[in-house]
Amino acid sequence: KGTETGELKVSRFQAGDGEDRHEICPADLNSMIRAIEQLGGGYAEVMEAIHAAKKQGDLQARVVVDAIPRTRRRYERNADADVSEESESPHFQSANPIPEMFSNKLDEEENKKEGQKRPRLEEDGSSEGGFLSTMGEWFGR
Image (cartoon, rainbow, N blue to C red):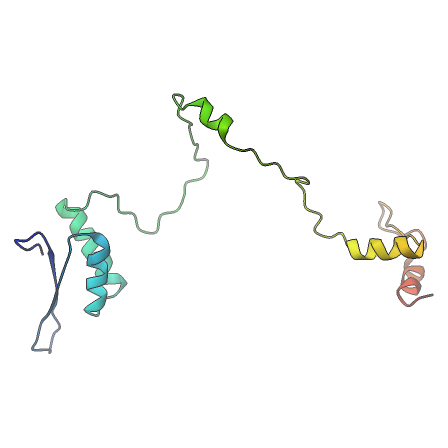
């Protein structure tokens, strides 16, 4: 509720409790939410106050709850936008756009030192020396 000075008076009434609690705060959303919290209010009370303020026309912002982005939403760039802003902004380019997640650089360096080459899998899934030869390499044979 608004006061004559332009501030908000947030009140909490509780059944069975003889005393009502009041908090006066500046007339902005952040202060209102903090006042509700100081009086023991939670998410439901904050949302109720926000919806009431929107319904009365006291809140100019759009209020959306559980908003989920729509699929196939398109962003249209403003045709009047200044092209020079784009040219002045630095362009960054990745040296390798596809990260090598599964490459083992340490293993490759060890093989280069030893002069060995690990058997590679063929397209059909078999290796050059077979599974047992691969296991032998694991144990140093």
